[in-house]
Image (cartoon, rainbow, N blue to C red; front, side, top):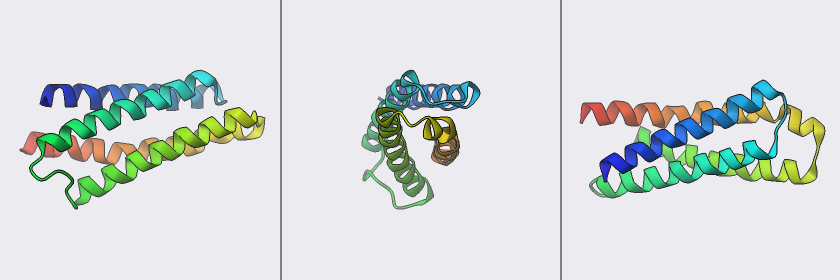
Amino acid sequence: MLLYAVIAINLALVFYSIGVWSEKLQGTLKKWHLVIFWTGLAFDTLGTSLMSELAQGGFKFNFHGITGLLAIILMLVHALWATYVLIRNDERAKSSFHKFSIFVWVIWLIPFISGAILGMAG
């Protein structure tokens, strides 16, 4: 199960990074970015769920656990907000959305990196 969890978390990194940085480079939020954001969230949720099953006692109230929970919540808010912006078709919001995307991506990297370090140390 560890292998599947690691694959899922790394796919989340790939999808989320592609979505965030292509949105930034293209200068506007597009529908395909939204699909990539939701896909990244799905892989992150799957990987986190699998890792939680492997962890003794499930969720840990520590740095990694708290930042991981925050990251998933922010990813969900990010995907929902992107959905809203595209439905409204607000050009100004679409062209500045990358600022929020990059913020969420950076926050998401914190538990990704701390998880990798904890995994190597364990």
